[in-house]
Length: 454
Image (cartoon, rainbow, N blue to C red):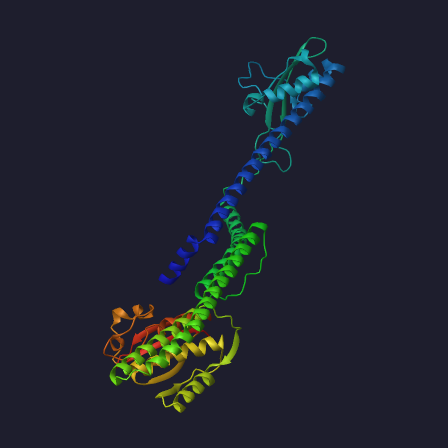
């Protein structure tokens, strides 16, 4: 549960999560606003239809009154015309319907001075005998709507009528129905997560490329696809990678040239040191000369390890480890291959071989022997090189990867070394997207672990 909560928090802190929240809220609110506008429009249309019925009836009755006013008035008094009756005495319009009055003025003319509005049904039909309730299918139905219309006809006589219509039941609004709102939010969330993943996909590719570039100076370039802004960002990142690789290559070439040029004076220096007659002094000078040569070689190795222009290949990891252990044993080094992990891995073979060789050399030099093993865990391959030496204090394990840092056995009076072997090993591991770390064994000795993708 805690892990799930952490993943949820991580998602909402990401750009995709924030886009998801913004789009979900935005689309949900926009949909609800649109539905509210549609609901308001529906109400307006409903009222317009009601007014059109009143206008049509009023025009019809007015036309009949124009042709035969006495008979029509008598029929209205006897309720012989369904939906039309005289206006009861004493009814006034306290809240006239201005929109209806305007429509009537357009039909009857500006001289008609119409007055119109809806009144309670009981005022219109106080003495009504209930014929409406006796209609089939309308038992216990709501009483009809009643409208009062007054106007002046073309003859200048003031006319008035009470118009009734079957009540129109307006359908209830479903906008704020919980199920309806849930559908809106769910649909918005589904679209939002799709858009968020689509929009953040180029950035995830850029993030992965930046991570690969942080551990290797020779990652694959990112395909430049997507919108114009995304293509521009990816193109700039690829250009940065190429320039960084070019800078490291130039540094390596410079160091190689310096190393080559130094070899000649170092060789002449050695020849001259051989002529020193004092045996003890000659031995010390030759040892210093050897240390100088080793420092130059390993410095060049360190520089070249960060500029690994090697193709990726799939290799049998157990075969490689076994062959390296056999080669070391043939040279007299106490190296053993203990356990394999089976299968293949995709790496840069030369970089991996040099990385393991450096760690094995350190184990033999400082721990007296090296045991090589391999294991798989959580989709990773772990190559372990263990020695049986004194180990390293826990607070100095990470410090040992810094250039020219040596343990207690590498200090004056101990075994010789330049202190950049582990630095080279870590740089080589980074070239094939792996890492190197150290830990002390429970029963003594130091374990170097190469951690890479399975």
